[in-house]
Image (cartoon, rainbow, N blue to C red):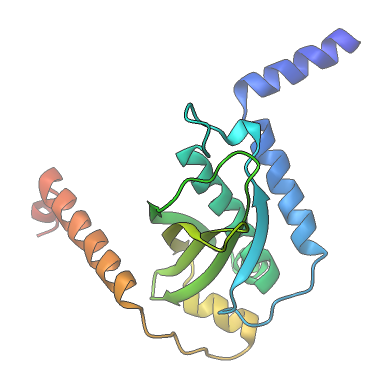
Length: 202
């Protein structure tokens, strides 16, 4: 029996990223029992530390780990401000449509940090978020990420109204976000032209 259990566990760990799903469950439970954040524009923070499985060959936090940690921080953020459960009730899904991360200083082994996440705005199709990795050693912003979270089968405005029971005015987009959105739009148009999609739609 023990060999069967070990075999099943080995199969799971070889075919699935088990730690990812376990971490997701942990974030869900943790956020569920924390106080609700009623201001959807409020910045939220989650703590982290660079562990051995986060390291690359240089002994720093692996580049891909930043994106993974941002995933969990966003999920935690949406759980606490009610956007996740609201989207589920409305039959909507939120998927990453674009992200850009800028690395400013590497995070070293056992270095404590916090991820500060906030919604900086939205349009008819997506939420736009900023996420910062801030070293607890000296408060230095080690990395900053912009993320476009597309809303499928609903809209950001509808989800916000469901949560807040009233219409919320979108803040003015900061300049760096405007430039980033222009880049996304230009890239999309170029790729559509390259694949001939624009001609097919005419």
